[in-house]
Length: 530
Image 1: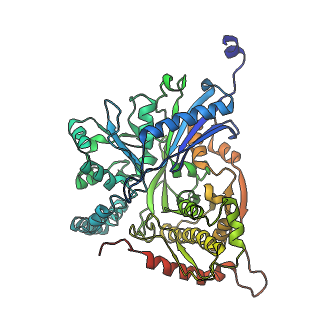
Image 2: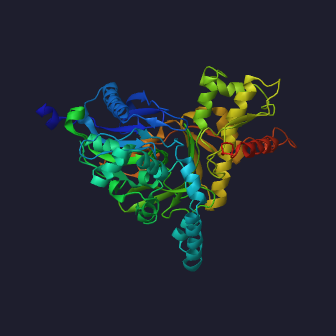
């Protein structure tokens, strides 16, 4: 072994894990960013009550260990050959635990969870919030500070941690007691994993994950003392906020047989943005997985939105902070999975052909809002619906309506982004499992009226976390090198009219879009109590 170390340096690799909503995936990357080994396992979602979505923290931890060991074994390498570990996680899913024992007080409460929707609605309508918005408008008028404008436009959402955490504190006596005793830790999935991987030595998160909680002040780059004071959340339970790319410590040697430096922790959508090499202002990334997340690089300043685009920290590496503006639709992959479970189709690979087998949806409209509607409509009480059904409606019409709804939501988010940010869009990169659907990709290009590029690797969150970790240890030398490693599967260009005088695809879709928008309006506020 000694002569091997001195005379011959073994090839080294970067290990990256992405903890998503439906699966945990681990890849071993070589210097060409090629995957040398992989392993994945499913995430089991728990639905204890209507609107409640949870995950078992211990099952998640075991799944994490399983995929790391499996990917290393699949690559045929040793743990000692791993130079660094990068971790990407879904955002806004959290738990709380005892600092001394490491035992959680409750399951992870998922970002999809709706238990706090009534609390959110009452706060958004409260006199307190109306007063704050009014005062902040005056402050903005006098100072022209964007932070004041942002505060004057604040609208709470169930996807943000704030009120789900408040709900957990209100309903859990053990949790309240631990807060009083100063032994409570709060954390999103990344924080929980860091705590477990370092055997309780590290209680931290990074800026990208913190900024997605709704409790972090992206202007001041710290937890919002004002918000915590307003809704009675104890600042003492929150983790330290670190840079996205840094040395977070090493995994305890007892876990994998050797310690691995943890060199990046990054939220999944920001990781995908980095993996797509969207480093420049105006670069857009669309990830279509369980939900659709559309992000634009806004540069060194956070974007203040009036229509529900959310200002996020993309990443902080060294002194550089990059901000994103994000819009999302929560039920993209969920809708397709639902259709499959209804046996509208058996194999996901066949649905593009089914959609193309009919000329239109026969007037059927599908509203993909199992978890409410997000930007720009922002209605947590909206319902999912199928409208315009007729005796002539076939499975192919239903499938086409479902796929069209994904592209229509893409167009809605894209137009909101153009209208709000006033940033010239330089390029559009698309990834995520649903991006493998050619029908959705082509219709999205037609509706945007510009080219969209599909990545060869659909799992860009894993690659992004690997890129950040690899840059941190010198595995890759620069972002320019990363751009050269990037690969595109296919570029979808907007179709032109078939012949002179023929209607362009977007004009053909105007009646269908208008019908769909009417269906959206009818689905809104469905779950309101009489």
